Length: 103
Image (cartoon, rainbow, N blue to C red; front, side, top):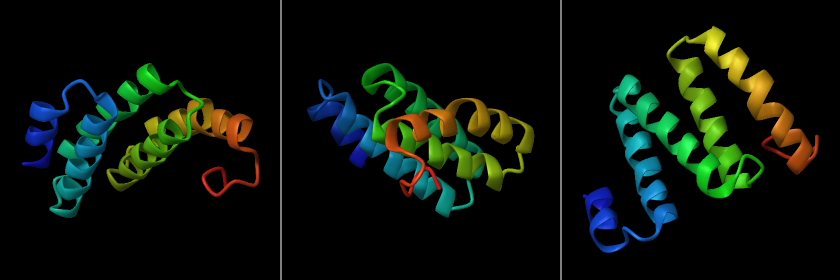
């Protein structure tokens, strides 16, 4: 319902839509619908990269969430590639090696 309302009344604000989608993905994961949550998390990460850039903290946080889902679904090859080649290098460069998201 939150996502539908966000799309209806705040469709001009993509970040509000992405926050609602993030909440929906968390709910799906809590219900055990991890495959559906993964699809949504991939979409969220991609949209954050496009709208905020790869170095924005929200984008990196979305990438961490995506990594957690890949791990839960045992998609280890994709997880390693994504984390090592995209997520961690950008997080270290942007946030520093001592930041919580980088550790």
